[in-house]
Amino acid sequence: MTTSELRDAARSAAARAVQASDGETKQRARRSAAAYAVEAHKKYALAGACLTFALVGAAFGLRFPGEGIGFVIGTTLAVLSVFYVGLIGGEELGDRLMVSPFWAMWTPTLVAGAVGLLVLQGGRIRRPSAKNDLAGEAATHMSPADSKTLATAVRRQSHRARWAIGFLLAIGVLDAVGAIDAAFALEQLGRLPDAAAAASTDPATLAGGSLRRTLEVLQITVLLAAALSFLLWFYAAYGNVRLVGSRVSRTSPSWAVGCWFVPFVNVFRPYEAVVETWQRSEHGNAHPSTRGLAAPRVVGWWWGALLLSKLLSLRTIDVMEAAQTTSQLTAGHVLLIAAHAVSVVAAALAVGVVASIDRRQRGLIRALT
Image (tube, rainbow, N blue to C red; front, side):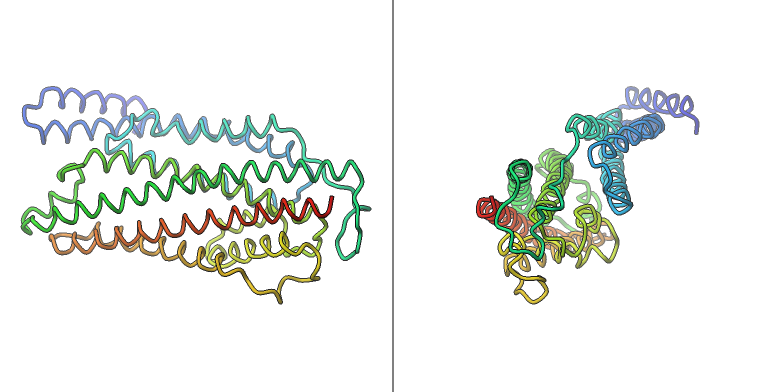
């Protein structure tokens, strides 16, 4: 359908909603109008995204000159993945009348444009000179200019660490609230006959439906913000390891971030990168390689909890979508509670990982400078 046809269909559905006498017919008409309006705004938002991506590309090119093809691919995957998740999530929220069609479709484009402008204003990153690189040497000092660059990089990493910790704590709180809400919904489902199960799949049919809709919106928003803040912090943290001279690092900072978006690779490579960042931040270049060092247990616990929470979430979606009886919905809500609980543990462990690496980097920098 063309944009004009979508708008006409949205107006027609909205008119039917006004004329409808019963609540169910009115609700169906409103959702139909929202779906058409979302599709109309989606066409314009995707066109605007082309200009936004050009701005983001130019901003990162000026901000990080000479990073190579790895940085280009990693950044592209990261931006497109976050944009796609935001677009799909916004479309779902718009169709379900949780947000207006305009904000549902335009928010990812506007956020990407804002990120591009912020990066564009940041200026270039200066690297320490090669002659003062500490890799494989017993150098005991750096030039004043390089020390200043290093101190600036550490302050940037610490600032991003605080943001990442804040959003991770917010995720933990929202997941805890979600687990409590799912427990209340489970108690209500226990009193429903199987004949009412189909109606109970809509959160609005249970007490607290508005709370669930609010939680869904907040969880999606905070999750995107936490993912972005964590990756920005990790890029800075991994880059700092190289700034103090670790030329033997196993990858570049751009690929350390980009590997999170590569299927199958993102099951194990991000864990290895975080372990390497922890070990280099703690030991510097005291060891020629980190392969023989023991991995921090807290990083392993965090990574295991993160993977388990994602698996539980995917399984919950499958069970809830296929549920037809109260017993099936009950099983879905049990999985939902478990997914929220494991996610709370993963968020708490992630806070510990970020704080520990930040503390070790600040201590390592003080020792070197």
